[in-house]
Length: 308
Image (cartoon, rainbow, N blue to C red; front, side):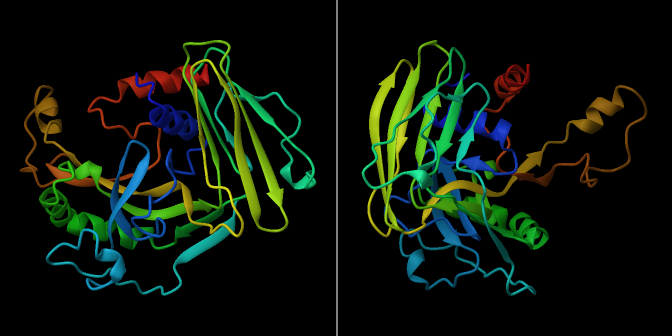
């Protein structure tokens, strides 16, 4: 079982908040692009989303200057022009099970300019994570998920071949992600706990100034815990992608006919039945089973442990 902070962060938050998607340990784009957008095609590595191109933008768009686009790049046609639903999320703190706030100073909206608030977080003896937001995030999702899914299945082989030519270490179909939704915030505080120390504790400070200023500060980290802070400043853009949702494509290898053949006459599907053949299937991004390991048993056992 991985104890890397970005794996712990993603897995434990996905169990508690399955509808939010994949929690990004590094929400910033690192200056390579403005922000994660609906329609982006890319991959996630070490908790960071890496954008390749966007299915809604033409080949010549400036944002495609980093990697280019596949040779036969086409823009996704939609019959619904306004397909992105936007809503302000109502959650300030996303906490996995076993994570506790032991201070009573979390209500940032009640702090004055002269206050010096501190938030302390614990997770005694268990794996866990917390994502804390100074201001609530904007949630955006496409309502045209069916069109997104069909487009990805149609073009996934082309996208994988393109990624392989870039030499980025992306050579598996399931590594490629088509973004269908996101949470974006101005700033954030990410905390990940391992289960090796019962005295693990993290403290941080958050201060809001005026209507747009945000300051986040590291105070203390004790035990096997990791604290990662988002940006501070005035008039921060809402471009920090804390959750990303989307599709990936997996291939179901032709094992079911062989298994069924042991119990009766062989099937006459000829490998063309999508349920039993060697075909591509869409998989939503964001479950606790999203993992680079071929066998997700370690995540399944963790999921069971979290529910006990």
